[in-house]
Length: 150
Image 1 (cartoon, helix red, strand yellow):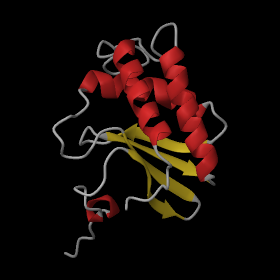
Image 2 (cartoon, helix red, strand yellow; image 1 turned 180 degrees about the vertical axis):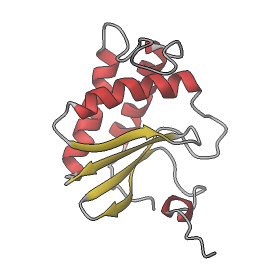
Image 3 (cartoon, helix red, strand yellow; image 1 turned 90 degrees about the vertical axis):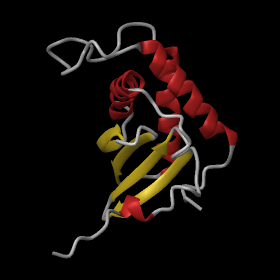
């Protein structure tokens, strides 16, 4: 059996850090690598942070006007994948920044924080999502985003 390696496994994770990258393009769908943590650096998101950020960010980004196909965490706990149809990189970057700011400014309950809405609704903490959003927004505002790994 001939197995093709996942495209994400062909990128040398020792050579890049936090940022926003284009992981792949499939027709009109762009997969963005929202790397909130440096790979293999020992600083990983815990489940509550990852889970809560996912609840908050996915709600805000899906209401942004972008044609979002999917948003979810990486198993390695260093970021998220965002898939957008007919993406304009500049618009996507601005909407990601805006969603992060909305998380930081959010005053209220975590979206989807009930037993009927979530399979692990007790594993949510808004403050951890706010810290992660602030951390990632600082990364995005620090340097010019080229969307390239190297």
